[in-house]
Length: 76
Image 1 (cartoon, rainbow, N blue to C red):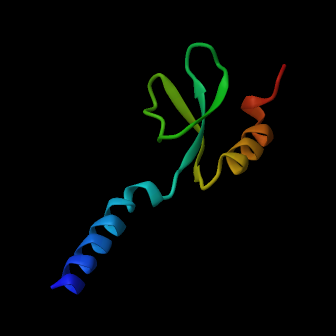
Image 2 (image 1 turned 180 degrees about the horizontal axis):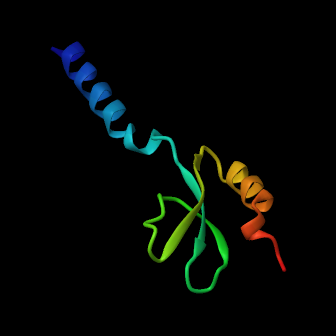
Image 3 (image 1 turned 30 degrees about the vertical axis):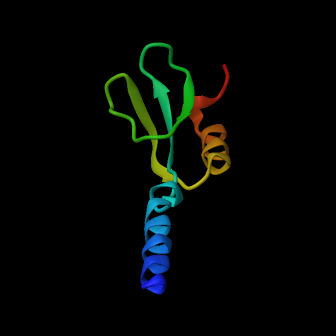
């Protein structure tokens, strides 16, 4: 009985942490009005924020490097 209760508690605690462990995604986008590039945590909708890289990145650092390499994001 105690073993089953302990197992149930551990299982519940483990499942509760799954959404927090989900991989984050970053996208390089440009605001359609201000034309400023930014890194966003969700896929751009294509109307107010335009997806520039057409690719998701696993880390914010990777997205920043990609943003700096894109010609549309170069400072003029």
